[in-house]
Image 1 (cartoon, rainbow, N blue to C red):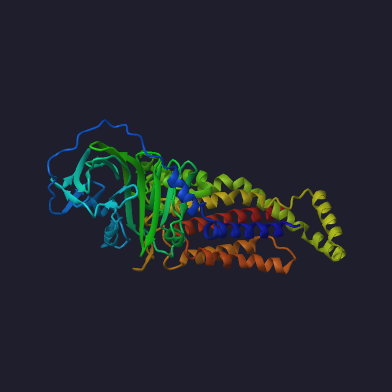
Image 2: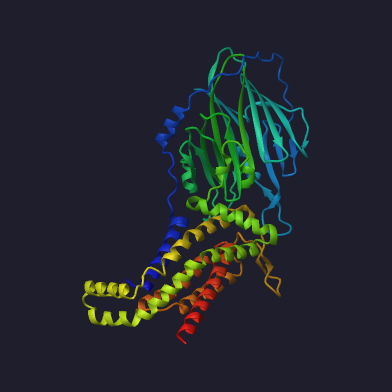
Length: 538
């Protein structure tokens, strides 16, 4: 085996690994229908820890429904007073597109309102379902304008024999909404029941966006799991229980999550007409003439990792970089550190690439030195092939003897490259899932034109300039690399830039900038190595 063959194998392996990981990787295991039933059976009623409280005897007086607005420095949320259902949740610091007149991101969307985002479902065991739609509701408060601290809205309702009071508490500094739902059973007997807290949101990304799918995810005693395929979600396969800590509808950048107040909750989800739905159900026992409070929290907003670290229910685990999490997070930290000085993520990526190249410079140097030594052995290897062409075993033995004689490791040029592959994938995940890169500009317009160019590092290059130039640098690298006498291998190696160029056409431009810069630095290092060898020979 010669160095070129190893290099080819490594390159192809990298391509296959990449394609499998990001296009064909199997979903995390999800519970099947039989398991769902088992989860529901496991959800034991929560204990009655609250003290009995006599139900109020005064008649409930509903009020006319209206929109109630909550305005904070981070968002503007609108609720319908008929049940406290969320009508819209507009983020003040995030736009839908990079266009100047783009509207701000609304997590809910107009079409999702009918699905009851932040609605309440009260189910009597073995009986009908009482939802926010079937009750009568009253609201006596006013709109909230929260600059600092916390404030609350209270919605009161009567649904059958049950009196409901929803207290929603908002924090000006976060996207977290805490709910205290007090249910009073005014019936003559106690009942086994369940309370479901709901979420509904429009798709947060295009159905065709395989890099940034809208998904259903959750975290329980088995760890973090998710379902990305919409058909699987529509079939009800995204279901979980077993010490559920949180459940969420989310994309790479935004989320609508529910954190149950108890650890015996069960999560159900679905998708229809581009609307994702989620319900977290908590079982409970409602004694006659006793008030009981059930708690939950909602996080509706961007996937800001720093804020999520301070949230309840281990919400920080919503942001997941997969296998390369251990590399992606420190790389993002380094990128943000550099951004703090240069205030441009494109420049920060270039500086980070330079830093990575410096770290791996000794390994790359050994790789180039190994390839140069292999180059000098090529005439001898060619003669061995001519002599033992029909005896593969003998050819292998003589080739290995030749390597030992001249102290050449045929894998020496490839091992350093293998070490760098995980860093590439870690940076890929960081650039694809880091909300910092969303709509982050590098070069707003192509120089000397009005054409929008690298105005969003999380999106592909609209002019395809960077991936094409990147492909050209790969061709130049191949031409600078010592070649073997095997024409087929040489042709395959020259085909690699074409394959990678096509693959990178739709990648985030931030990643292409990294790869292009890495290629340019590698070419410079290789040129220095060639010049050094020529000087030695002279």
